[in-house]
Structure formats: C-alpha cells, structure tokens
Length: 144
Image (cartoon, rainbow, N blue to C red):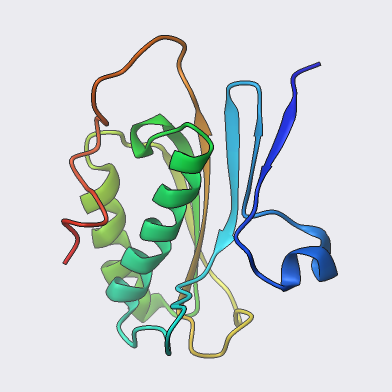
C-alpha cells in the first residue's frame, strides 16, 4: 500500500476536527476545502479575490506535496450566491485555462466564516518523471 503523507496547514482546527490541508497517497494529492484565509487580517471582500486567495493556498499545498497546478484533475467550488459564480469562474479559468480539470461549482447556503463567498477543493495526480515547468501559466506571485 502506498504511503499516506499529510500536508498540514498549521490550523488549530486540524486536530480538533480531524483533517489535513492535503493528503498525498501514491501519485494522488487531495486538497481539503480551502477558504480565503489571510493570516494577518480579514479575507478579501470580492469573490474573485477570495478565489485567488484560495488558489494561492491550494498551490502552496500542492507544492508541499510535490504536485503542480498542472497536475490538478478535479476541482469543486462552493459559492454562497449565484452572483459570485462569474468572478470565481473567471479566476478558475485564469488558473486552469490550459489544464481544464473536471470541475463542479455549486451554490451553498453558507460557509464556515460568514465573510467567505467561496471555498475550493482540488485533486491532483502527479505524473512520474521529471517536469521542467507547470503547464498552468498562473502563479500566486503573478495573480493580481
């Protein structure tokens, strides 16, 4: 059986709730639902900016697990209103326009933090062999 590797976020809720930011088993990386958490203040108010923050966190978790955004094969986006869908979808397209993973977006009644308009999950499959670059042109540093 493949080794199970947990990728922590440092959240105090991980042991209380019993979850990891991400888990890698073999070539598969699964990233938990990721909200637009900002360490030193409130989350952005704009749904697009919140989605961008979620993808920054997801990209960092994937990297720690040895994966790239280009390895993502599935995303799930939870939005709190239909009004947020266009902005969140536009950021998803910016991040995954070349990768085009299977994706789902659903409207939910609410998320853990009432200021959050979006929460995103991702799943990746890491190919064997060496890769020079990420097929996704998006990087958290270039996000704006």
